[in-house]
Amino acid sequence: MSTEPLSLDQALASFDALWSPRVVTRVNDYDVRVAKVEGEHLWHVHDDTDEFFLVLGGELHIDLREPAGERRVTLPAGSVFTVPRGIEHKPYAPDGARILLFEPTGTLTVGDRHDEIPDHVDATTGHALTGPGLPGPLSVQI
Image (cartoon, rainbow, N blue to C red; front, side, top):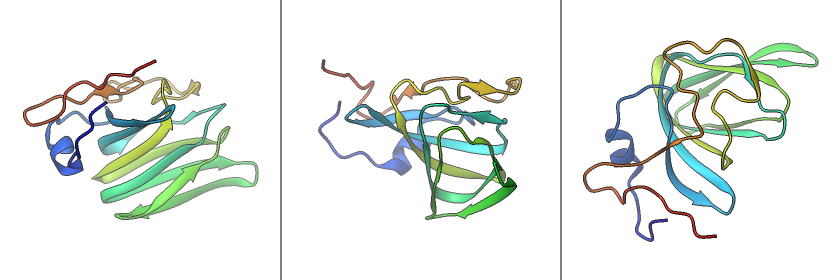
């Protein structure tokens, strides 16, 4: 793990892939990931963990299927929202957004149960952050 500060703008500028998060650091057993998103993700659920979203730029919408029915939350830049474990949800960003996610290390971006994965969504536990001027792949000491 890097012991130097990291610019999130520089991290986000180091890749172009949509719906394909990069791990920028780890906090205990959690990944801090950044992603560029545009269009729709897919309906999915994380059975055993909440999912934290911070919108760094743009606007993110999240549709939720809760016990009381369906609803939509809209997150402008600077907003945070946590999807509780076990709640089916679908993020989307009609005009694009930059987001930060906070999830237990090893959490799949498509959850434990999900719709068919479209080609534009990367089913990953997060990619290493690489690029000029960046600290390189994170290492975890056990």
